[in-house]
Image (cartoon, rainbow, N blue to C red):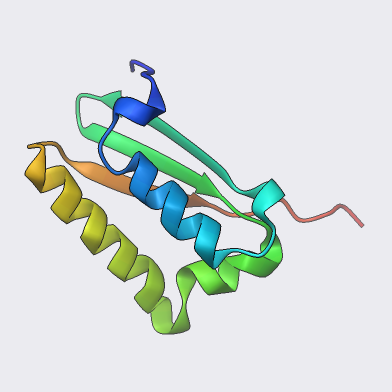
Length: 92
């Protein structure tokens, strides 16, 4: 796997902009991107309370974001995938 400058990868600026507008805990928003033989993988971490907003009712929000990323990737002839990492639950 090869890590690249996330700004140069298609879809990264888009996902940062969309998620910055969607989430409330902007300080806990983490967007990482890397490229490998399968294409571009964008990994997203949000706070626990923002996870519901990101996924949306019946998963429609995240599905729509992934569809738009697929379109962006298609314009640059690259496959773009989005992975959402579950927030770490506080140990009780």
